[in-house]
Length: 116
Length: 113
Image (tube, chains in turn blue, purple):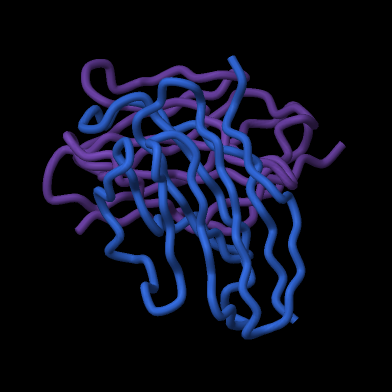
């Protein structure tokens, strides 16, 4: 079974530029998550999708961050414009069904974003 | 709202020694509890989880954890550390019926030869 795929692995941009990350979840997984992991901290949920609908985006800074999952499969996360505090690893995860909290989330290797 | 506290941001043990990583949670309802491991430049991998039933949970790589409701704890242990156990470990909690994971700040485990 192929795992969660993310690209790019690394990205360096200057502040005020825009950047986009891509995620392809495990085949058949209906639920997709984007997390932000700042150095030295645990991951923090940014947004959760069930198929192509948003379930929870309460912690997404909507003035600069956006995410979509148009066909209910892969997803993109965008930051525009980037700030220095956005330097972090962005992790994508997927799980089989929504509402089954005992279903494990499977994580990709993440995209490490550095803002200069 | 639920939260997770991991005691000790850095734990160092000798190879072959007992590993003990501490996790305490707060939740107004019975939670589901997870331990994840993260190797450098990789995503998180599930070690073990507690949902219901037996409070002593066994996971991969010889790790286990015990859910103690009275102490609101879910400490991770391994009887004998191996060099390959060096990594960052995260405890996480979610509410039943929801899948939003709340993570602790992590504990970096170092193994001394």
